[in-house]
Structure formats: structure tokens, C-alpha cells
Length: 214
Image (tube, rainbow, N blue to C red; front, side, top):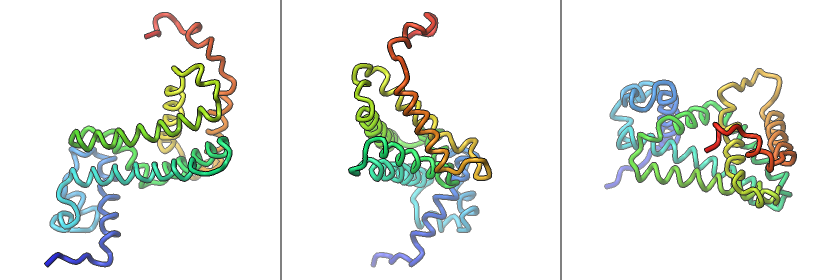
């Protein structure tokens, strides 16, 4: 007979993932043991294996869940009838609100530092999901700035600069600071939008030092 799930199955599973994310972010995936995850989650080692077959499965589930939440944010912001500018403002606000939460902050740190600990097939899935998010954002930027189609070499770098700014907000942001996440998101979006609108792309390569060109 199949084992029935307890009513608190999902909440316990989330507690394990949050405990693991905190430990992986602080110590790394390789340096964290199942015993430490169990202790942090308030479970026995056997209790962990009731929910996950291995430490690698915990990592896979954690990163998949993290990217699913980011994908949902992108879909929520982009799949509306709002004007492109409003979509970009909503996207930026939702991303910053997400990345400034402690649980998401830990997951993102693990994504950056420990994705290489996944088996190749799982790693490819995570990377493919990241690429879909990036491509969707590129399409949004193109709808905002059709002139970028004439400077296509800059579209991906601009998109990655945007995500670089947003993704690392958690490394310095404090909820005791002068700006709330929503205000910070508006500032970040305006910096990007105004920067794209006012950049003279024709001068970038001309002004770059010869030694820095690839």
C-alpha cells in the first residue's frame, strides 16, 4: 500500500528546502551535510530522506522552484495588455521584491555558486529556463526601443546588465534603508529605460580603447 502524505507534508518539504538554501548559501553545497540540513530543519536524517532521495535532489528541487517563481514573475508582468513601459516597471518591481526576500536571496546565491554541482541534464534544464527568461525580457526591450533592432549586438548585453543590477540587489539592500523595494524598483527601471533611450550606440566601439576590444 502506498504511504499516505501527512497534512503538513508540503510545509515540512519547504522547511527542508529553506534550511538547505541557507546552509548552501553560507557554506556551499559540497560543504553541507544531510545531517546539518536535518538539524537546521528540525528533523532527523531519516526524516530528510522521507522527502528527498539525496542532497542533489534537494538542490535540483530548490533551483527548479526558484526559477519557476522567476518565470511566473516574468509571465505575470509580460502577459498583459498593459503598455510595454508599464510591463517593464511591473517586471522590475516584482523581481526586486522577490530578490530582497531572505529565502529567495539564499536560493539565488545557490543558483550562482552551486549550479555546477547538478548533473549535466539538470544543469541544462536550469540554464535553458534562464535563457527563456532572458529572451522574454529582450523581446520586451525591443518593443520599448525598436531602434535596438539596428544595434542588435547590444541587446543581450543591455539585458544582462539589467539582470546583473536587479539580481544582486540583495547583496546590499536593507529594509531599514531610505527606499522601499517598490521605490528602488522604479529607480532601477528608470535608470535602465532612460539609459537605453539616451545612449549613442554609434560611439561605443569608436570610443572603446583598442586594448579592450575583443
